[in-house]
Image 1 (spheres, rainbow over the protein chains, first blue to last red):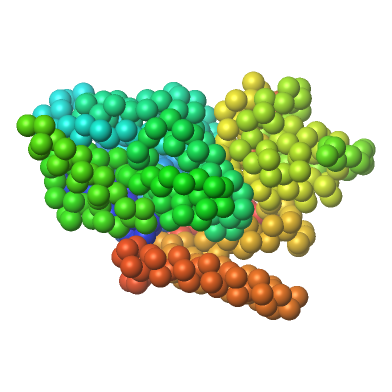
Image 2: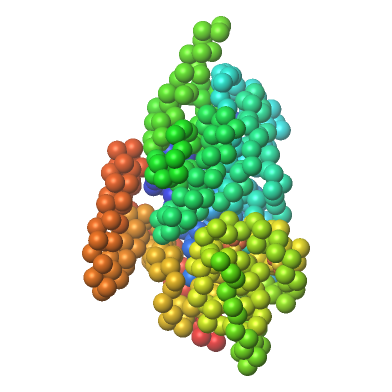
Length: 296
Length: 204
Ligand code: SF4
Ligand code: SF4
C-alpha cells in the first residue's frame, strides 16, 4: 500500500535521520511512504506571525499536489508541518471564498478529499492491522521512556478534529505498549519546549525545558520519546546547556519514536542513524539488548 | 510585582478592538476574565505578570500602545494552551500573532527584536526558495542581529552570539546534522503569485 508522504524542510536537513527512519519503519510495516512531487515549505510556526494568507496558501499547495496524484492519505511526521497543514485544510474547507482565491493560483487545486495524518495516527492504523505486533523481535526490557508530545499534536489554533486527548494524549503509549514497553506517566507530556525560542529567546526556552527535564528525571525515566523534530532538536541539542544552568545532573537521550520501533524490530542502528544524537542513545539501546541476550 | 496599569481610551476602543477581532478571528468580547488562560500560560513566569486575560482586557479598553508592546506579545510561544482551555474558545496566541503583525506595520521597535527577526527570516527563506534552508535563513537571521548590535556598538553581544552559534554548528557538523546542500521547489512561481495576492489583500 502507498501513502503520500510530506517530509518538510527539517526532515531534509538537520533531522534527516527521522526521514530515513520513518520511511524504513513504514516499509517494514507494509506501507510505502511516497514523497509528494515538488512540495514546498508549510510556513511552520512562523508564517502565522508574518502573513496569515500565506500560512494557509503554503500548505494548500502541498495538499493539492497529493490529491492531484490520487492519494487519499498523507503522512506528516513533523508536528509543525502536520498542524499547519491540518489547520489550513480545515480553514479552507470552512471558507469557500478563501478556497477559490487560493485554488485559482494552484496548478493542482485542492478538492478536500485528503486525510492528513500525523505519524502517530498512521502508526496506530498499523497497530490495528496487527502489522506492528508481528514485527517485534526485542523486548527492550529496562527502557523507561516518558512520551513527550509537545504542543502541536493535540493543540490547534483552529477547530480541527483532534486525533487524541488534548491534555493527556495516549497515542505514543499505545504504540510503545504494542512493543511491550512500559512507559512512565508524567506531567509534562504536552508542555511546550519553547520551539524557536531556543534560538531567539533562549532564556525562556531553557526555563521551559528545565521543567520538563526535571519531571522526567524525578519519575525515573531513562529516555524521552517524541515524534516532533523541533522538540527532539531542542531537548537534545540544548540539554547540556539548560541542565548546567538549572543544576540538573542527569542527561537523557531523546529518541524519535521510529528509533525505538526500529530497535524493537532489530533494525541495524547504523541504518537508522541512531548515532546522530547530541546526547548519546546508542549505548542505552545496546545495553538493553545485551541484557536481553544474557537473560535468554 | 503588580499588574501593569491600563490606559482607557474610549476613542481608540472601537476601531482597535474591531481590527484585532477581525484579523485574529477571536471574539475578545466573550472573555469574562476567569483567568484559566493565565493559570496555564507556558511563559507565565517570563512576562512580568502580563497574562493573556490582561492582554485581552487591554485591547478591549483600547490601550493600543501597551497592547502592541508588552512581554506577552513578544514572548508568547504559540503553544495554544490558553486557547484549548478557554471556556469561550479564545485563542490568545492568534491575538499575539496579530499584534506582532500590527506592530510591524506601524514600524514599532519590537520588545524582543530577535523574535521578529527570526520569523521574518524564516518566512522569507521559505517564500523565496519554496523550501526553508536552515543555513541560509539562520545566516540571514544572525546578520540582522549583528547589524542591529553594530548600530548600538554592542560588540560583546555579537561575540557571545557567534560563540554560541559556532559551538552548536560544530556539534551539528560532527553529528552530520548540518545540511550543506540547497533545497528548492520548482513551484516557487505559484508561491510568488499567491504572495502577490496576499499583498493585494493587505492593501485593500
Ligand atoms: S480563559 Fe478565556 S474567558 Fe477566561 S480569562 Fe482567559 S481568555 Fe478570558
Ligand atoms: S499560546 Fe502564548 S499566551 Fe497562550 S499559553 Fe501559550 S505562551 Fe501563553
